[in-house]
Amino acid sequence: MASDLRRARDEQRKERRRGELLSVAAALFVRKGYHATIISDIAAEARVGQGTVYRYFKDKRDILDHLFEELVHKVFEQFSEMTSRPPSNEAEYRAASVEALRKVVNVLDGERDLVHLIIREGPSIDREFGEKLAGLYERLAMLARYYLDNAIAGGFARQCDSKIVSQALIGIGVWMANLWCTGRLGDETPERVLSEIVDLAFEGFGQSGNANSLAGTHGHNNGGFD
Image 1 (cartoon, rainbow, N blue to C red):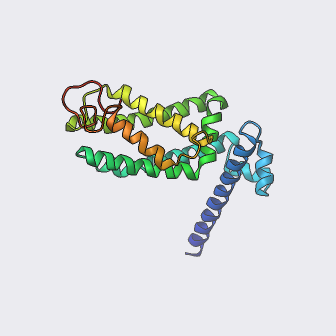
Image 2: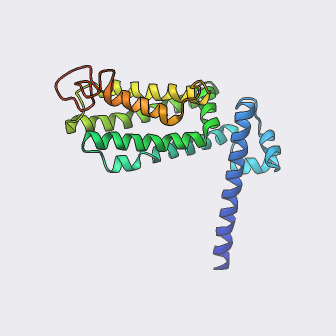
Image 3: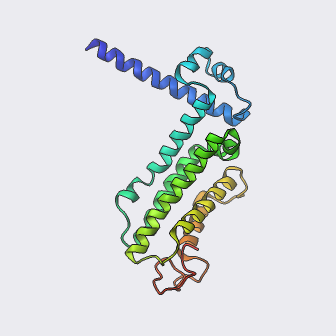
């Protein structure tokens, strides 16, 4: 029993140290840039030897991978409720979309500098990481397409090429995230931006309540999700 307790405490200590190293590395990547940061910088900032860093991670790229995967997990976790309980009408769809996206915004806001780093430097780190980042966007597009296909099948979204539309929606989201991270949205709040994006997705550019709405099932080709 004593040995089990000791092992549990050792694991907790290791997890704390691992988390501390990740936090320190993330702060340095943001402050100095990923390419300019080296393992000795991380060790010095964390007040440990370089050997301690290498005990937990192979290299700084391994550290970035862990930071990236943790962020991705947090983002997709926010859609779990919407996925487990798919909306059955337009009102539910809109409410679930707003709630899930609000949770995602909260996650990204808590990791704002890291998100900016990944968007800014991710494609230039190396080909593998660039593909990993593209894979994230593709996974998000697939998730958006899953929701949209369900809405079309349920009769509360117009017929459209869900593959193209879902890719377009993610493109809008990524670009808006970039503007937000770099402070180019001015005084606009995340809530205001989210509201406008959701309105665009569900109502298109037409007047509210006309055939351009998400629920329009009159055979029009220029409706919601434009």
